[in-house]
Amino acid sequence: MAILQNARRERVAQNLAKGMSADASHTAAGYKPSRQNAARMSTYDDIVGRVAELQGRTAKQITDVRDAARQHTLAAVETLVSVMKDRKAPHSARVAAANGILDRGYGKATQHIEAELSVYDSLGLAEQQALLAILESLDVDTADANDEATRH
Image 1 (cartoon, helix red, strand yellow):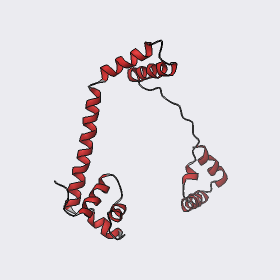
Image 2 (tube, helix red, strand yellow):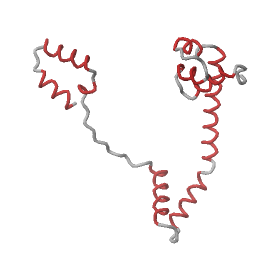
Image 3 (cartoon, rainbow, N blue to C red):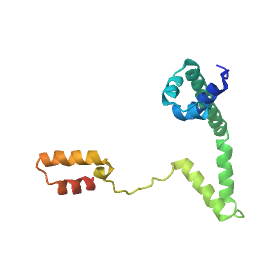
Image 4 (cartoon, rainbow, N blue to C red):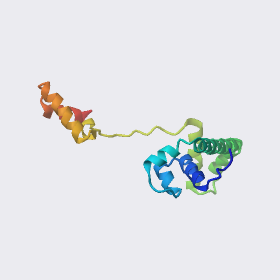
């Protein structure tokens, strides 16, 4: 499919292909703001086809770049090894090269992340009230339930 003849429709398709919402794509292309019209236009065959083409081309370009980079893997590793072994290179460059080699050979080290999450606090006000009402109907001490929810 070629570039769409209607320049504004082409802009809508390009924006959709980049991940913009239908509404934002529609308005950014110069149309009057209208969610209904934007939603309808995003289903038009020419728009859908053009978006698919643009996204497919992007996916192909990423694959092509990845393939080209992989063709130089051996040379890249050899370069990292030579920098790592070069006693005249700055220490920061040697350490970065060594880390690059280790990352490629063994993968990046696992990072431990600690977080305290409260399911109760992530609920909206209406959801919290509904939960408390359910717990009260079950004759559960809501203060204990709230503490328990905070621990999980």
